[in-house]
Image: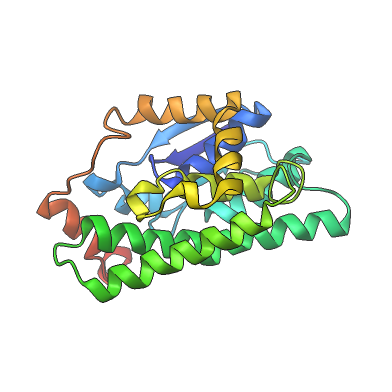
Length: 235
């Protein structure tokens, strides 16, 4: 059994998408980040960066004591290796998937995240910051759109690279992007949305957080919890 520490964010969806695709047994442990539950002692023992998602696998491959992991990219690699799915065995296909997974972790996720922050959450609308991150998100969409030309998925077969990227493209409207400008990306988005496992994963999100999918209006207290953290929260 896997305990998945989860909230309804793009990084959280990556893991539920994988788990639903493979049928691995798992239990969701909700961590409401708006309420500061990510700073609880029990969660920090699993995720020292106080960010979701994280997991504890009580039945690791080959046996042994439970293993805990944080960072969604590391979790996807671990789960792919555990199951032998969605990560090719041959060196060429394997590292093609890995490089695009890291591309999401280092580029698409952080840039789109800053885009969300300055466009939607920051109390002061700073034109330079908004333009910077909207434009960089647009560039990254262009990279992915080009990559998908003549390919069904990012690395040909459906893989953890697609699961990593998909949740960060779903909220394209909130990122100031016109998906019609990226026809290959638009087709890919629809194809993954239609997968039964994707639909189950996003249904789980609604079960965990009934407000999922609704416009988010952060209170001042939530802003302090989410955006005002210093080293004091992990001491």
